[in-house]
Length: 264
Image (cartoon, rainbow, N blue to C red; front, side, top):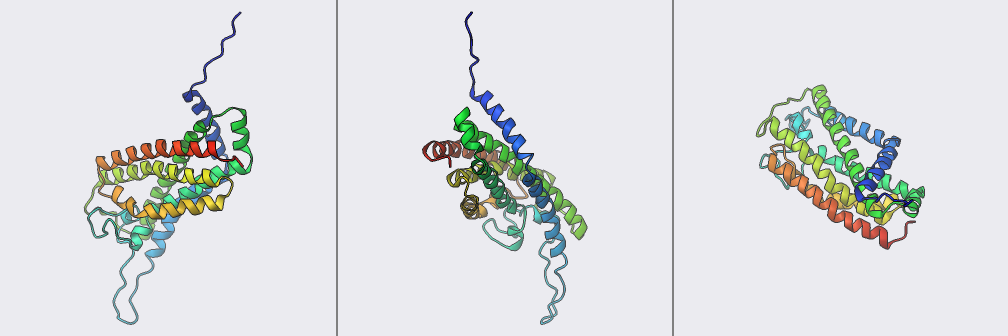
């Protein structure tokens, strides 16, 4: 009787890795803590900045509020008062801050694999490195998307508590939906970048976070242009395509890094 061995395809191996990585991520307290922080952050920002008004004792003039409506906590309007390349407080203290928190998520989650010996054991036993890279990219993308959604919900609640208006000037509800999807799809590109540095640093979490946040800061000014409040279908497609290109391109580089460097 002839024994037949079932061929293991990339899709089957990836499904197995995804099951393991999703289980590992969602049994770690860190992902829930970071989601809770993402939810609480906009509430604190909007409520605290709404109490910073009052008259200047020297001039007697009323100080301008940092946020004049809730949507500024999400993004800015392309071509509006906040220019695409300008960096004011509302541009810096909005949803774009989440990309730096996602960097921490990716770096800590990846470093734990190398610190615990899980990655070395995994590659020794069966899995190919390309499976690991794409699985980590997809799982961290889901984690990042959850953080983005948590921030959005927190911003809506924080705006209501702070008594800020929900008026839409220069954009509409469709633009907000497109903006949110664009920001979520852009997470894929940033995850691919952060994962590459995390694999360079391996168990050295501090180094991976430093490198990832450094590159994130360099790209920070590009985010408002790609994900404005008056976004449309083109912005969604561009961020989706860009995220896929970064995931594949940097995924290949990450695979080379794992193949050419020590796993400890």
